[in-house]
Image 1 (cartoon, helix red, strand yellow):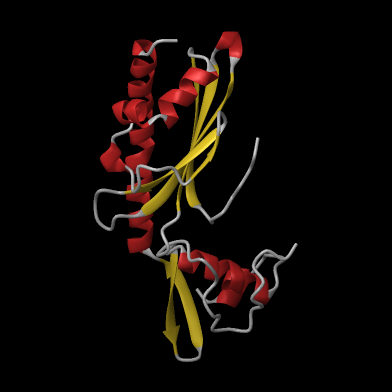
Image 2 (cartoon, rainbow over the protein chains, first blue to last red):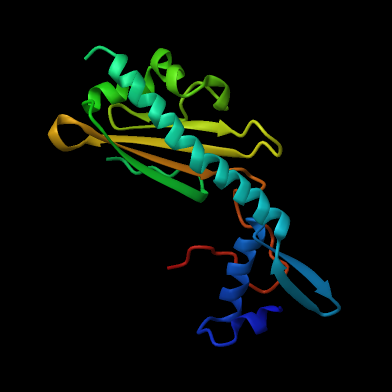
Length: 78
Length: 119
């Protein structure tokens, strides 16, 4: 979809939409594809997968680490 | 509590844990390397030295994922008193990798203004 199609039904200016898209693009959540005069935006599956993998890993990592911390706290002297 | 936000973070994970131990003890466990290494492996950190410290309250460490693409992030531990002499440990983990969170907005290829956070 191009930026104006994305704006349909939203009360947001074109420059504001461009800014939001720029943020999503640098976060690799969307990517742009030029077609002649138009720029189309689509979800960036690679970037999304990268971030999703990171989130999945550390979502499990911290609870496990905190379990280890609790054991340490029991072993430590006051 | 000091709320310093030196760099931008994205994709933040936030956890909050109630611990039986008092805040001073939890603080030692998260800030003294000898204790910290026992529950948070040194090889998981990008740097064994903290990024910043607010003694007794908050400590931040840089983390580098051990797997490609080795994404860089920062974890913040905040300790505060909890119920019955215990404490609450808040863990905030966000990506800071420059590939995902650039220091500034790249030169725009459109007519959008450069100000990002105009109120």
